[in-house]
Image 1 (tube, rainbow, N blue to C red):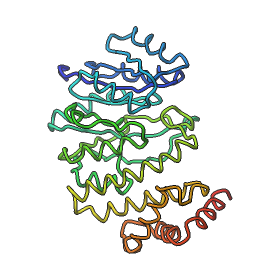
Image 2: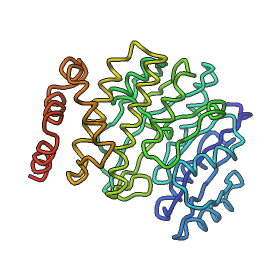
Image 3: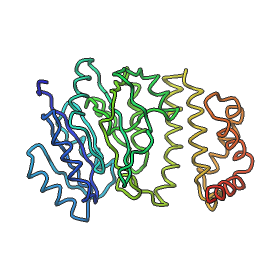
Image 4: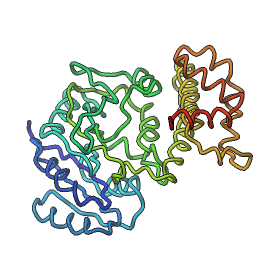
Length: 329
């Protein structure tokens, strides 16, 4: 491939000494060479910032950006502002990629004049065991039309991660990662979708997620854990607005998504927070009560989903206590 197109690969980094070199080397060893690699050190305190500088000394394509801690989205947005490439990619500092990942993605985008393409990803735990697939890649290259792609996202079968994708920089002229929230990839992707006529999906697994509890991009503290479930409800409301405006044929699927996200919230909220002072909890109860008919008639919810939703609508605290005991057992 003629390498006259520059790609900018943005890596948000925070206190990740043990994984960073493997991650960065998987990018510098790409078969496509015209890259700039932006290592955004998000205020690391364990020496990771110095490691970034040492890695930059090994390869002139690496640029290091040091900033005060602001979170992954803040680091990504900083990288986007500094990026000079025509296409942008993102890699989490825990993870690593196959040597031909960006060559394959760029080839597809140029051949089909696309603006976004994705590869498959798999997850590996601390012991090196492959975890069940979250999303299954196609057997051969396919273009997923925007409506079909959004539907897959709403049915929890699609891949919303920006790490598996290569994106034309024009899509970031107006949109950026929301800061101060979690589940930010989903939020940004559904905002971008109306500007796309489809996403190209490649076969195989080229992106490898190193999944471990407590990792920098996958922390699970009690505070962040509860915030995740608040953010996914907010994202569900965002999707409903987009669907009702641009994709009315997906209205029923979007309602299912809203119900499912609220079910997830209700099954994880601490019982101590199920009170009148919690405005989010009160709004979710009201939503469930207003959508009992949708719960019963939805063709996209399982029988188990419907039972839990109806019971949580009738007696949320009692059901939550019983669910907690069942999980403990």
